Length: 146
Image 1 (cartoon, rainbow, N blue to C red):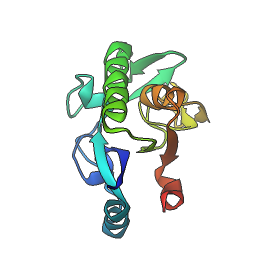
Image 2 (image 1 turned 60 degrees about the vertical axis):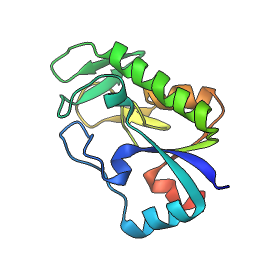
Image 3 (image 1 turned 90 degrees about the vertical axis):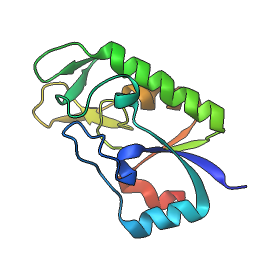
Image 4 (image 1 turned 45 degrees about the vertical axis):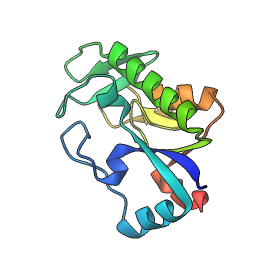
């Protein structure tokens, strides 16, 4: 049986990005991932009840705010819990997550000023998954999964 890998759904071409788009990985990369892993897709933002499209959001400390200033922390936390539940249910030991995302960012996220300033930190889902002991990878490190 293949190892299971939690993966940001947008990498699979699902239109769940804030603007209704996706962040599909190249087909060769997806093919290689599918050969090695059973992929478990998740979009913590939509799993938490946020619509598509939606305003972009960024973390501000422990809170998450939309560009207009609305507090969407509860939705991000709910989505993070769903991601953690999926990882546990399917026995995932690793996750491939969208870099700099307020939910999936691993090690680096935007600073909450909507100025494209990157700071050290994790998104809400990445934070919970890391605490659970999952190995986290962003798309720039996908080769490390092979």
